[in-house]
Length: 201
Image (cartoon, rainbow, N blue to C red; front, side, top):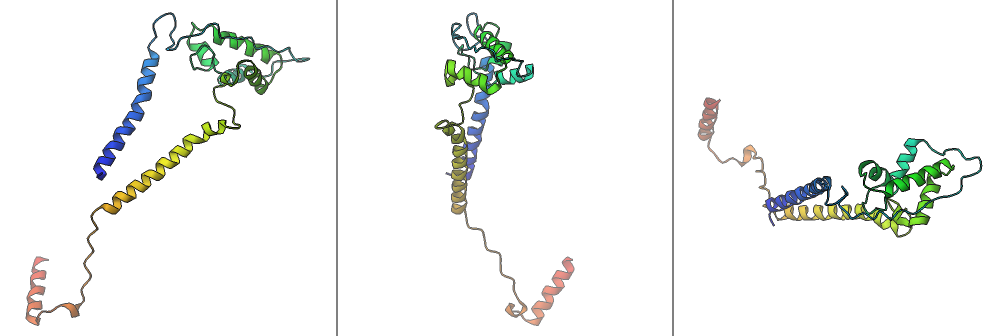
């Protein structure tokens, strides 16, 4: 494969990587058929009650902004793949994310910390309640594999480029400088050469 072909294929692959998310986002912006603006079938019955008794002398454990940040870590269970905050503020046909939001507010008012609230949702829904899996056990593979794949791809690219460089035409050697002793000319020929060079200057 020539360098030009390789670069053309790489450019086409990069263009594809850039266009696919844009096309997906464009399709996601178009409402699906039916009563929902979501591309997925929504399970309006997916909400389960996540309640805990309030702690003794409980006061709200976080600000509304902190609560919203927490809801970004919880996956809406309607099937939309969005977090609770995004689903409840963008898809008003969903009944699951508002129910999950009410549970979060109740737990916040009951004095529960962010981690305790996440744990309560995991106990009720399983790990699918989280937008990202916990960083423990086999879940580390999901966090580390993209970086490993990226490193392997970069190493393969370096190997391919070096191989292509090695197959290229050898660079022409620079002529060795000549010393006056290497010149075989008479004094008359050298004088004519010198005169011609001076005229050109």
